[in-house]
Length: 114
Image 1 (tube, one colour):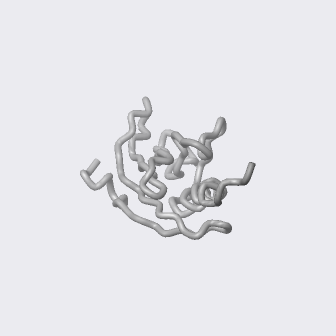
Image 2 (cartoon, helix red, strand yellow):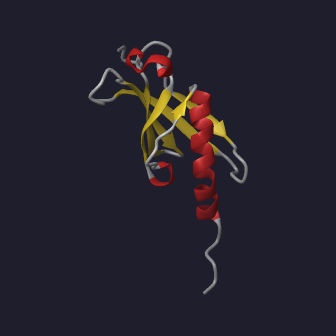
């Protein structure tokens, strides 16, 4: 794997504005992931500078699922007992932003009175 994270994968920043979220900065950083299988091409996903997820591109060993992106690890509201598979990075980022939006919105509200 090349230093940039492999063919076609480069660090990127995306501004997403899902419903009820004024804006979110998602940064993807290429990384190799020790999964115990051929699936090593991965991405760290930072939301507003905080590590939120690890995505891994599924290898040919997965047959029809080869090339899909898999949620290897999600933190906070992205943690899932049944991690998802995504057709492409746009779909993965949209899901991540959608799951994080309510959390970010609620964190920005003023505290409720007692």
